Length: 463
Ligand code: ADP
Image 1 (spheres, rainbow, N blue to C red):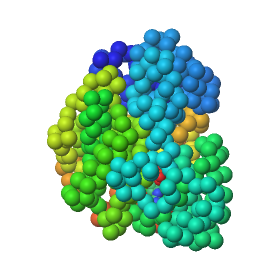
Image 2 (image 1 turned 60 degrees about the horizontal axis):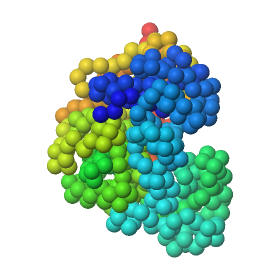
Image 3 (image 1 turned 30 degrees about the vertical axis):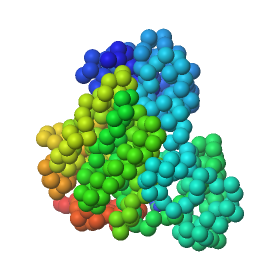
């Protein structure tokens, strides 16, 4: 097994990795920026090293500093977590060159799947359906217009290097293609330093369904069922659940098989996620494969009982998967609500602040992954995820009830969060019926927020 792992990340995911390592008797080396001196991950690791100033570019994205720390601390492996350098093929490659085991697929695999335009081609070859659109990247706006005419509007112009819903623009008619092209390109250059675009037909009212993949170096590739991540605000996930209400056993079987085929064709090793959009008519289309552990991985852990991070570490050590496809059993239902330090009343503006009081929910079937503590000052430099609240129960309705009471127990004082909005979603008829698609939240947000305001007003009026 591994002896000492450097964790090239921060926040809740760094803690998650530390926990898995401790249970496996692996030492951990945390790295932290000047803004994170009092962060929990720096406290809980076996050892912690400062790697630079607050700005991510100078610390958590500083490859040189991180690799030096790993070598100085004599680590034998590196876990990148999610975000930051986790999908950077050069970094994965440099880790291996420096003699470290990289917890994830090889740099070549990350590169092949990291270009979303190229990943489409790979998926197609593996026999997975892809959204009608371009074969590889687009040359110019004229080609985009020709293709848009061919597949029919509305279409999406998407950045090959895209992520987090950025670098993506919709064109509802051929006339709108040049504007969408320009905007998508500008955003792609600004966010990813790469303006390459491809085109996909916009699937109307789809679900976002993703499959968790695990693959070892012995050639075993399995999936651990799906997560439905259709509750999104502006293409960013807010609530995830498993199993999905939208899948029949047959569809699950087909999509799982397609997901495994894509991973196999890519020569995949480690934990990965194959993402699909599913049309209301039951047609599914590959959209991308993420080559890292996902924020929402605990949903799968709760329903399958598999510790995905431990499994990642085992695979990096060269051990075979500890279970087979036949041994994967989904039990009950799990829901995750992301609690972001953002103010829904101010267009979800990130609101870092000092957590003056923290109370976390507990009890049967509840899990909270967070790096917050009372007195913690949330730094303004990084993403706004403050906590992930999860509920697991025998049935979906019980899981919804459990999530409601977990969110009612949660107290984060000092900064506004998206928790009250998540609580409202857990009471919304459409969500409870499971009848929602990726447009649900954007369409219902104003109504939900108005409801919250009315409730607040009424509560204040009470004598
Ligand atoms: P990112 O890598 O930026 O997250 P994705 O390609 O995964 O981008 O897409 C993000 C979200 O955008 C999806 O979850 C889905 O809601 C929506 N989306 C992407 N492609 C399509 C499509 N062709 N049709 C409809 N919705 C799409």
